[in-house]
Length: 262
Ligand code: NDP
Image 1 (tube, rainbow, N blue to C red):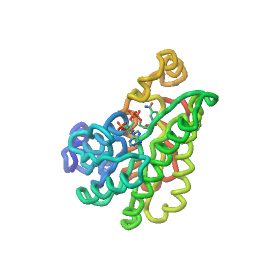
Image 2 (image 1 turned 135 degrees about the horizontal axis):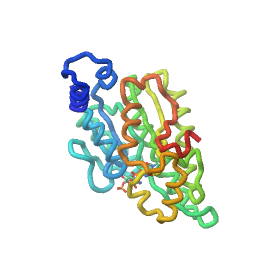
Image 3 (image 1 turned 30 degrees about the vertical axis):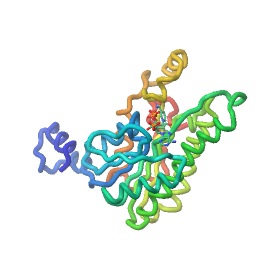
């Protein structure tokens, strides 16, 4: 029984072997999980949660490393060969990847009139192209196992839109079509593909935004606060878990009501 489950059972006043409905809900099969961009921000928190829940966890990083208890492999999202090598290393150490979280991403914000072609293509190539490369590689093992959980980290901006982010929004809305098409391709093989769309989350990515812009975002969020990385991990863990087996092609907003799915 994993440590988180034991903690929850104790909080419910039961013993670790008791048969509460709540314990059944939280019980998960230990899986091999790979999180891209797990050296900081949202990816780090997701990896930390999976590790705490008793899964075998690897993260990709270009610098630094993932949380304690996880395996770190180097990978560059724009380079298929480095992604292939990362998967091969993880498979050798932890077994075939059963859950993949495509989280690594960048922004290069500026208004369309000022946006260079490189601003546009580098964001698309990292966020959307990187997801394509990672998921394509992950799907090999998943098809063989006839099991897989693919979770793509999009953004509220993908469906809501945002001035100064046509590159980023296009890359993130692309993930929705990607997930829904993949659901139609691989759904019958026991593989689900879902999208988590965070709102404004306090990380390095958002720390660089001007204070006035941050204030404006805060005013538009119904829950009147920015998200923390821990607000995102619950939705990701749920989609990877035993109880989400019949959910695929969904977009789960975790945005304090900012976009409400739009
Ligand atoms: P951070 O900027 O804190 O972290 C980004 C991560 O992506 C880092 O691990 C970084 O690695 C990795 N990465 C970026 N480019 C590449 C690349 N070319 N190859 C390999 N790794 C790369 O971002 P967040 O944690 O805030 O965001 C994580 C995800 O969540 C992103 O996809 C983002 O778009 C999305 N998101 C974030 C929101 C927010 O408010 N923070 C809101 C909505 C969505 P390295 O450290 O080596 O650069």
